Image (tube, rainbow, N blue to C red):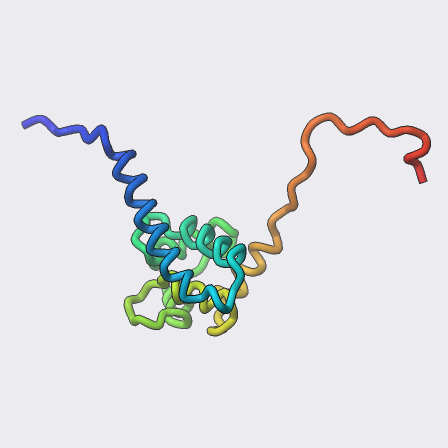
Length: 140
């Protein structure tokens, strides 16, 4: 019995991402009165980058990868406690609604502070290319 190769896997992944994005947009609409669109868009892109398997939740494994990525490795119990501080559904994972509440400060948690410091630690983009020529009048 030969294995079937699914040549449409990329297409299915794209459809899954589009569906997840529309679900996140509908949840973000609930917070539209409280937050501006740019902030909600930033939170949505952050959440989607942390949700590796596109399940709509950030689980223990994804949180562990996130912590390792920002050089803050944690034990299983520490990760479990971080999730419990934020999780309102009791699923043991952080959904987008919980993520927004956490990032806006409605629920205080260690994860919120870590993500804020990660955001501050990102370097600003440096100009690329050849530096512009300066004249004598540009000097102080």
